[in-house]
Amino acid sequence: MLLLFAVALPASSQEKDKATHDELRALRDGMLEAIKKGDIERQLVYLHPNVVVTWENAEVSRGRDGVRKYLNRMLNGTDKAVHAYTVDLTVDELTILYGGNTGISFGGATEHFKLVSGTELNNPARWSATLVKQGGKWLIASLHASSNLFENPVLAIQRKITYIAGGVSLLAGLVLGFLLGRMRKRAA
Image (cartoon, rainbow, N blue to C red; front, side, top):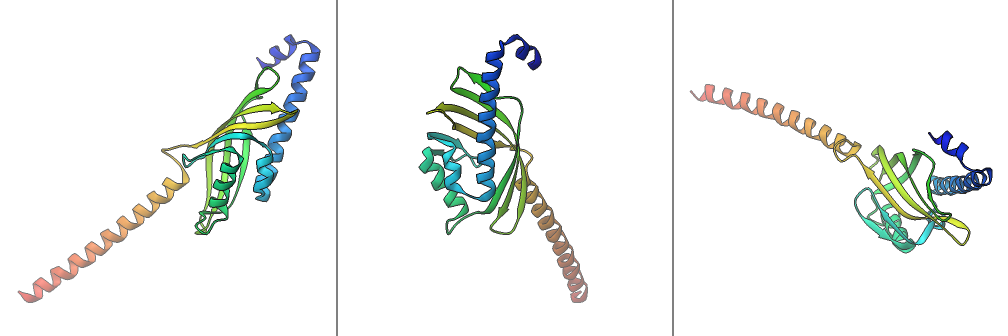
């Protein structure tokens, strides 16, 4: 289907779209490299000044300063929760272009978190982004990240803790019952 679309476009349009998608790939690669290095200020370069980001914990950051505050709180503050993170990103298809200055992109990701507690998580996620071209440069205007509410690594850890706590409680109850039963037999 995509091949048919490409064939139907005039060559000049195909070249323009190729150049646009190459620019968008450069944005993606630059952002991923900044995330990999933990360089918050470099990440902000790829965001529109009025960006809106909805994070996986359902918090929303508005503007570059809002994103900076969120990332610093999560990664650098005295109460930080995350020691480090990286992301492996996949794009489902080429960015859907609207005119020459707006696009929507979406795909999947595996987010690698190393929490302050030492726990490491690999979280499968989905994302979507609205991109705008301003001043000759593509920027992320909106980003939404989400995880499966019903199946994710945090729930898996909670389930494991629940099973362990249940098993320990059952064992403690059996031992206590046995001991109380013996004490009653001796008293009788």
